[in-house]
Length: 221
Image (cartoon, helix red, strand yellow):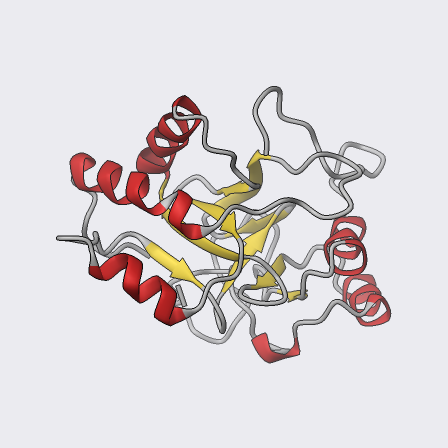
Protein backbone atom coordinates (compact mmCIF):
# COMPACT_ATOMS: atom_id res chain seq x y z
CA UNK A 1 0.00 0.00 0.00
CA UNK A 2 1.23 2.53 1.16
CA UNK A 3 -3.09 23.50 -4.84
CA UNK A 4 -2.73 25.79 -4.18
CA UNK A 5 -1.45 28.61 -2.00
CA UNK A 6 -3.69 31.06 -0.27
CA UNK A 7 -6.92 30.80 1.57
CA UNK A 8 -8.35 27.31 1.78
CA UNK A 9 -11.67 26.85 0.04
CA UNK A 10 -14.31 24.27 0.66
CA UNK A 11 -14.90 21.92 -2.25
CA UNK A 12 -18.11 20.47 -0.96
CA UNK A 13 -21.67 21.60 -0.71
CA UNK A 14 -23.44 21.14 2.60
CA UNK A 15 -26.77 19.81 3.66
CA UNK A 16 -29.09 21.82 5.88
CA UNK A 17 -27.55 22.01 9.35
CA UNK A 18 -24.03 22.24 7.96
CA UNK A 19 -23.37 18.51 7.36
CA UNK A 20 -21.13 17.80 4.35
CA UNK A 21 -22.91 16.17 1.44
CA UNK A 22 -20.88 13.01 0.91
CA UNK A 23 -22.74 11.78 -2.14
CA UNK A 24 -22.04 15.11 -3.87
CA UNK A 25 -18.35 14.80 -3.04
CA UNK A 26 -18.16 11.18 -4.16
CA UNK A 27 -19.85 12.04 -7.47
CA UNK A 28 -17.43 14.94 -8.04
CA UNK A 29 -14.44 12.68 -7.48
CA UNK A 30 -15.80 9.91 -9.67
CA UNK A 31 -17.78 11.44 -12.52
CA UNK A 32 -16.10 14.87 -12.83
CA UNK A 33 -12.49 14.00 -11.98
CA UNK A 34 -12.57 10.32 -12.98
CA UNK A 35 -11.04 9.17 -9.71
CA UNK A 36 -12.03 5.59 -8.81
CA UNK A 37 -13.74 5.50 -5.41
CA UNK A 38 -15.74 3.14 -3.25
CA UNK A 39 -17.38 3.34 0.20
CA UNK A 40 -15.27 2.57 3.24
CA UNK A 41 -16.48 0.26 5.97
CA UNK A 42 -17.29 3.15 8.33
CA UNK A 43 -17.89 3.13 12.08
CA UNK A 44 -20.34 1.14 14.16
CA UNK A 45 -21.93 4.38 15.34
CA UNK A 46 -21.25 8.04 14.41
CA UNK A 47 -18.49 9.39 16.62
CA UNK A 48 -17.51 5.92 17.76
CA UNK A 49 -13.88 4.78 17.53
CA UNK A 50 -15.02 1.23 16.71
CA UNK A 51 -14.81 -0.06 13.15
CA UNK A 52 -17.90 -1.61 11.59
CA UNK A 53 -15.80 -4.52 10.30
CA UNK A 54 -15.70 -7.84 12.22
CA UNK A 55 -12.17 -7.27 13.59
CA UNK A 56 -12.44 -5.94 17.19
CA UNK A 57 -8.79 -4.88 17.02
CA UNK A 58 -8.97 -3.16 13.62
CA UNK A 59 -5.89 -0.95 13.22
CA UNK A 60 -7.59 1.55 10.87
CA UNK A 61 -11.18 1.76 12.15
CA UNK A 62 -13.63 2.92 9.50
CA UNK A 63 -10.81 3.89 7.15
CA UNK A 64 -10.59 0.90 4.87
CA UNK A 65 -12.64 -0.98 2.26
CA UNK A 66 -14.49 -4.07 3.39
CA UNK A 67 -17.48 -4.96 1.24
CA UNK A 68 -16.97 -4.22 -1.59
CA UNK A 69 -13.21 -4.64 -1.72
CA UNK A 70 -10.71 -2.22 -3.23
CA UNK A 71 -10.94 -3.84 -6.68
CA UNK A 72 -14.55 -2.62 -6.92
CA UNK A 73 -13.47 1.05 -6.98
CA UNK A 74 -15.04 2.84 -9.93
CA UNK A 75 -15.73 6.21 -11.53
CA UNK A 76 -19.11 5.02 -12.81
CA UNK A 77 -21.69 7.63 -11.75
CA UNK A 78 -24.56 5.17 -11.39
CA UNK A 79 -22.63 2.83 -9.12
CA UNK A 80 -21.28 5.64 -6.96
CA UNK A 81 -24.73 7.18 -6.63
CA UNK A 82 -26.22 3.80 -5.63
CA UNK A 83 -23.52 3.18 -3.00
CA UNK A 84 -23.91 6.54 -1.24
CA UNK A 85 -27.69 6.59 -1.56
CA UNK A 86 -27.70 3.39 0.46
CA UNK A 87 -24.81 4.36 2.76
CA UNK A 88 -24.91 8.19 2.95
CA UNK A 89 -22.33 8.48 5.75
CA UNK A 90 -19.82 5.96 4.39
CA UNK A 91 -16.22 7.22 4.15
CA UNK A 92 -15.03 7.94 0.61
CA UNK A 93 -12.11 5.69 -0.25
CA UNK A 94 -9.88 6.58 -3.23
CA UNK A 95 -8.14 3.68 -4.96
CA UNK A 96 -4.66 5.08 -5.60
CA UNK A 97 -2.50 4.63 -8.67
CA UNK A 98 -3.64 5.07 -12.27
CA UNK A 99 -6.17 6.27 -13.29
CA UNK A 100 -6.53 8.07 -9.97
CA UNK A 101 -3.85 9.92 -8.02
CA UNK A 102 -1.18 8.19 -6.04
CA UNK A 103 -0.26 9.53 -2.59
CA UNK A 104 2.51 9.77 -0.04
CA UNK A 105 1.58 10.09 3.63
CA UNK A 106 3.40 10.90 6.88
CA UNK A 107 2.62 11.87 10.48
CA UNK A 108 0.80 15.18 10.89
CA UNK A 109 3.55 17.17 12.67
CA UNK A 110 6.20 16.29 10.11
CA UNK A 111 3.68 16.81 7.30
CA UNK A 112 2.88 20.35 8.47
CA UNK A 113 6.60 21.19 8.56
CA UNK A 114 7.06 19.63 5.13
CA UNK A 115 4.17 21.65 3.69
CA UNK A 116 5.67 24.88 5.06
CA UNK A 117 9.07 24.02 3.58
CA UNK A 118 7.63 23.08 0.19
CA UNK A 119 5.71 26.37 0.15
CA UNK A 120 8.89 28.25 1.07
CA UNK A 121 10.66 26.66 -1.89
CA UNK A 122 7.81 27.55 -4.22
CA UNK A 123 6.97 23.93 -5.05
CA UNK A 124 3.57 23.68 -6.71
CA UNK A 125 1.45 21.21 -4.78
CA UNK A 126 -1.74 19.34 -5.43
CA UNK A 127 -4.42 18.58 -2.85
CA UNK A 128 -3.37 17.58 0.66
CA UNK A 129 -5.67 15.42 2.78
CA UNK A 130 -5.41 15.62 6.58
CA UNK A 131 -6.55 13.60 9.56
CA UNK A 132 -5.56 14.39 13.15
CA UNK A 133 -2.71 11.87 12.92
CA UNK A 134 -1.54 11.75 9.29
CA UNK A 135 -1.56 13.87 6.14
CA UNK A 136 -1.53 12.56 2.56
CA UNK A 137 -0.02 14.52 -0.35
CA UNK A 138 -1.79 13.54 -3.57
CA UNK A 139 0.61 13.11 -6.49
CA UNK A 140 0.59 11.93 -10.08
CA UNK A 141 0.56 8.14 -10.49
CA UNK A 142 4.02 6.59 -10.26
CA UNK A 143 5.38 3.14 -10.97
CA UNK A 144 7.05 1.04 -8.30
CA UNK A 145 10.32 0.81 -10.31
CA UNK A 146 10.42 4.62 -10.56
CA UNK A 147 9.70 4.98 -6.84
CA UNK A 148 12.37 2.41 -6.07
CA UNK A 149 14.97 4.39 -8.01
CA UNK A 150 14.11 7.55 -6.07
CA UNK A 151 14.36 5.83 -2.70
CA UNK A 152 17.48 3.82 -3.54
CA UNK A 153 19.44 7.07 -3.74
CA UNK A 154 18.54 7.85 -0.09
CA UNK A 155 20.76 6.87 2.81
CA UNK A 156 17.68 6.27 4.94
CA UNK A 157 13.93 6.33 4.36
CA UNK A 158 11.89 6.65 7.59
CA UNK A 159 9.40 3.85 8.11
CA UNK A 160 6.61 6.31 8.89
CA UNK A 161 6.73 7.60 5.30
CA UNK A 162 4.17 5.57 3.37
CA UNK A 163 3.58 5.33 -0.34
CA UNK A 164 0.12 4.67 -1.76
CA UNK A 165 0.37 3.49 -5.35
CA UNK A 166 -1.41 0.84 -7.38
CA UNK A 167 -3.37 -1.42 -5.06
CA UNK A 168 -3.39 1.15 -2.24
CA UNK A 169 -5.93 3.65 -1.02
CA UNK A 170 -6.51 6.83 0.99
CA UNK A 171 -9.69 8.22 2.54
CA UNK A 172 -10.97 11.51 1.10
CA UNK A 173 -13.00 14.35 2.69
CA UNK A 174 -15.62 14.65 3.95
CA UNK A 175 -15.29 11.38 5.84
CA UNK A 176 -15.24 10.35 9.46
CA UNK A 177 -13.04 7.50 10.67
CA UNK A 178 -11.90 6.21 14.01
CA UNK A 179 -8.97 8.65 13.79
CA UNK A 180 -11.38 11.58 13.45
CA UNK A 181 -12.49 13.90 10.66
CA UNK A 182 -10.84 13.70 7.24
CA UNK A 183 -10.45 17.21 5.80
CA UNK A 184 -8.61 19.20 3.13
CA UNK A 185 -5.45 20.88 4.41
CA UNK A 186 -4.83 22.09 0.85
CA UNK A 187 -8.12 21.92 -1.05
CA UNK A 188 -8.63 21.62 -4.80
CA UNK A 189 -10.02 24.76 -6.38
CA UNK A 190 -13.82 24.68 -6.56
CA UNK A 191 -15.04 23.92 -10.05
CA UNK A 192 -11.73 22.35 -11.12
CA UNK A 193 -12.10 20.21 -14.23
CA UNK A 194 -9.55 17.95 -12.54
CA UNK A 195 -7.02 18.83 -9.83
CA UNK A 196 -3.41 19.24 -10.93
CA UNK A 197 -1.00 16.75 -9.38
CA UNK A 198 2.79 17.07 -8.90
CA UNK A 199 5.26 14.28 -9.62
CA UNK A 200 6.49 12.35 -6.58
CA UNK A 201 10.10 13.49 -7.12
CA UNK A 202 9.10 17.10 -6.45
CA UNK A 203 8.22 16.17 -2.86
CA UNK A 204 10.18 13.16 -1.74
CA UNK A 205 13.49 14.88 -0.83
CA UNK A 206 11.78 17.34 1.50
CA UNK A 207 9.53 14.71 3.08
CA UNK A 208 12.44 12.37 3.82
CA UNK A 209 14.60 15.19 5.21
CA UNK A 210 11.88 16.59 7.47
CA UNK A 211 10.95 13.17 8.81
CA UNK A 212 14.58 12.30 9.45
CA UNK A 213 15.16 15.50 11.43
CA UNK A 214 11.93 15.27 13.44
CA UNK A 215 12.81 11.75 14.52
CA UNK A 216 9.51 10.20 13.45
CA UNK A 217 10.92 7.12 11.83
CA UNK A 218 9.10 4.14 13.32
CA UNK A 219 6.12 2.73 11.41
CA UNK A 220 2.78 4.11 12.64
CA UNK A 221 -0.76 2.98 12.09
